[in-house]
Length: 154
Image (cartoon, rainbow, N blue to C red; front, side):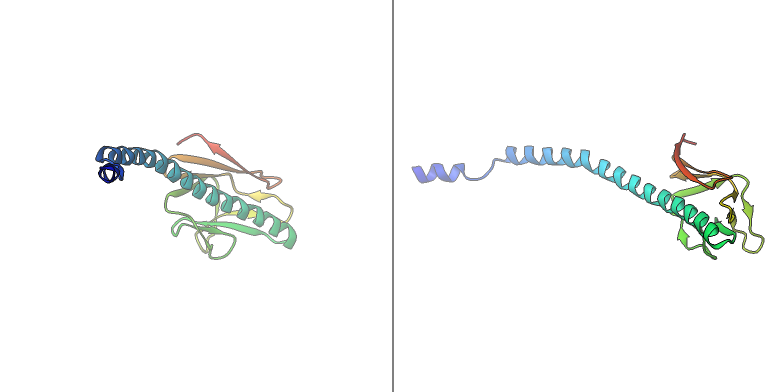
């Protein structure tokens, strides 16, 4: 008799298993979207940091070398950088907008020029992710300092 009651107590009932599966499903359903949003913010931050660091490097390179350095945006190929041709990729979900950028007549690239005295020609950049999240990269025209801020949605 004792052996029979032991066999019945081993294992879980179907109801207990279903309850555990429901709890796991709800937990995963709540956690996965938050993880996905966190990854998206990290990707956004990496792109913004890459652009701002490249701008800062361009200014420093111009001041150290005594030459004019161009930050290039090649919209047709979604590239940016200080090199010719630009080497950094702009992700497909990212759009960059700017007013009053000069255009290189030879390459068609839009450029921000950094001069040896630390000043620039060009304007601020607006970086838009997924046509929703918008950031402004402000470049001081005299000092060439770079400041990043969140913009209102377009």
